[in-house]
Image 1 (cartoon, helix red, strand yellow):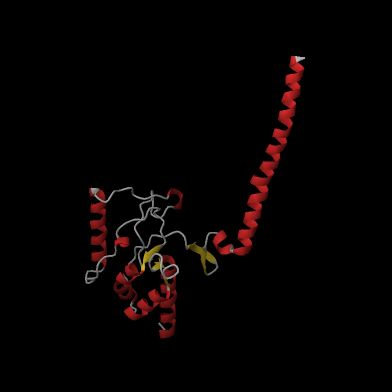
Image 2: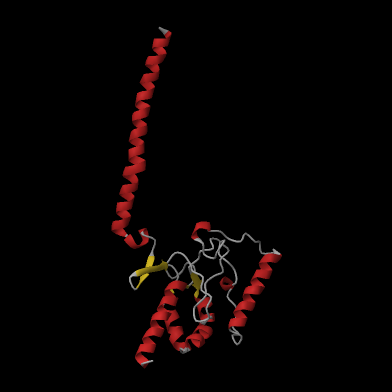
Length: 208
């Protein structure tokens, strides 16, 4: 009698538990993800698919992840501390170096030296985001001040006027949120793609 009661009691609890598990699995593991995915693809498909940037029929990057530009004719982004390569989206991380860490100080000095070497006649103050990495190591933006700092070098390397490059920076400057929060910034990849396009158009118009 005791064994029968325990068996009956166990079945009484087991069956509802199994049914509830199945229902919740279907609801939270299938129905909810499909619903949210459908809404995202309908309302803002660009963001839902990674904010990818296309050019000539192929994807060249994302508005959300920086790329490592080092040629003098391109605007450079923030340094990246990810490994084994810069802007590695699979290993997002910062350097974790404190402000008094000698290694951080040496890194900043080295980056300033690189900027000065690439543009020795530039006497503007070096913006802090050009010599320090972000917490994620993937930041696709630089401040407008960082973009303005690089105009002379980029214009010289591309044989363009500083005014042309400056106008392009202004065009691609993202204003402060609600004109109050944060600071003006520029997406480095979008700006560099626009540079390539402008230079190509200038070359075409000049008949070179």
